[in-house]
Image (cartoon, rainbow, N blue to C red; front, side, top):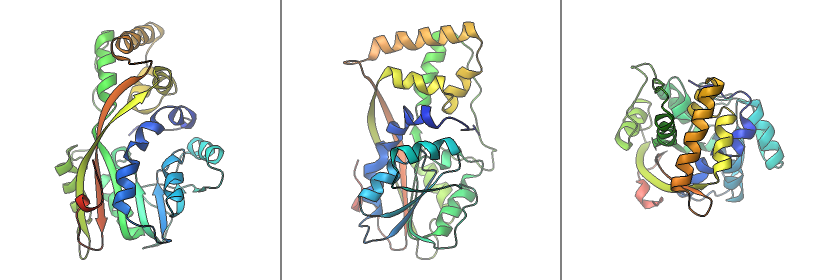
Length: 268
């Protein structure tokens, strides 16, 4: 899977805002904090962690990439930020009342093993998200407009992969033990429109963020000019009041130690 080394500032300026689009469903799925402890795994620049802390959770933010932790400390100096990440978390069994992994399981080599690890350290509830419709659709249109060859999709080993859908995500999590014993798992879709400044979106590719950024960094100068020209054309065609509206969809999963469905707590 892709590396994130040094991408903290570029990610914070772009996709951090997009990924915070699942904050509402995550807060609702967690339920009342009641003074509970929470681990945010793959916390990035800490925006969702800080929101959860403001909601009343005693939050520990866990992030393996140093540049992300540096940004988090600048943005949220009161946030408890620690190194570490999947597939092996540096915490004891049932160490936290709740665990959150927002768009993390789509970036690991073995999602089932990583999901199992999330369940291991969560005592009461765990929430995870993954993409159903990700930002890759927008960048694919840029590549096509630029006349560049399509890059082969980055796929997991067949034995580790899963269908990027509500049913596929739920099935993978069941395989990982998110519905065993008293635990119950439920998954639903959440869609939203991310209104982003084109300059911020462009900063993500120049900064090497995600698959599109890695692709752009690997282009030669001529190909980069074509890529940029195609980006500008698409922005000119679709921008509204200087902002680009991009629709995304995530699968939001919750496992708890008491049977309930997300329909009782989360909304679309």
